[in-house]
Length: 532
Image (cartoon, rainbow, N blue to C red; front, side, top):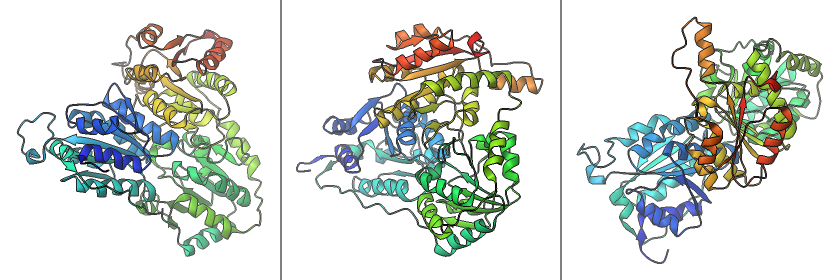
């Protein structure tokens, strides 16, 4: 920086030094200095149609692409609109940097009724972030941005919110801010790794339970499973860490009782990169009868609901590599593959009528998609089914934010993810109820001219809640309502549309969407004959 620039401009230059290439947001009167910086930078700005969409896009950019997502928001309503995606990122350990303005520094906390005023913005976002801070001066930002990227690199990667008063954003900055060196992720303690290896070696029924924190350890975990002849069950975020086609892998089947019963039979369980949360299994507490080894970057996971017999605070990849080395070359044989095969076949026993229809479509979708295609799933029944019934071969191919479980994430997650992944095919999979939460982002996707298939499963309402009401003999209230004419809606937003009435038509609709110059909304009715 050779000339005096505003704090907002300097901040954008600092973000560039951290290799930020895309930000999501909506400009406002309180972020003009940031946008002056964006106008003179190489960073791509994506204009969402609601700050909730911007937050979900940043989440999707990080979730699918594997590098931090960034959004720029106005103070007050910009931040509160984005609190839901921040909650999602927090629950699923997604690195998202939220930069917002806030009211002038001399007015903070005074309740003067300033434009976009929140008397304590940090208090609003603190429960949803790893760090919530307000810059008191321009010089604070070099440190705060350094802290944010240090958290993303070496801790459990949750969102960071940095608020900047509008008078601070406008202040001149004459010095050059430098990117700070971020710390390496924590490595495992050698003694604990040796203890874990010895326990796994003596196990008769070892099992690996792998979560989203283990995605970078994928090849190593497959080798560990093969060496121990250990079964593998993954969480929804961990799908693909070991290929679903691998004879030792049960995939994301923990949501099914058959997989949970299998887990209960293990005498030693290696839980790696997972908080073992309720939202993967949808039971309040898993039954664990074996000794538990936990590898997690978050030390609080060692003695929570599932206390570890051996706790290893470490980056999953570093720990897995060390564990593989200590295990040695000997391969064990427990006849695990035949048991896993029986469990996998049983996962589709006792399906509901809706689940059978879901699987019919998901099977066809799997056949028509390229092998590297990525699914951005919303919160809906067809995605719940896909967690155990849609096979993937690599990590980060199946995305279903079960942790916060908020409707409306699918479309903006898919937009952000597609921008991060470039030529990699991305498919959005949503239910008709959740899709309407962020439907306005169709315009954003059209504006970006994304070749994005958006499959909307239409079961005419909030069917999961309708089913739950019926199960508890509660009259249906608030779960049925009219839907828009989706083809007309898609056209009004600059998108293509398709209503396939046969398997062949569905195949063509998905294939054609990948070559279209704009997104394609593909509406699938649950009661379609071809899904019988």
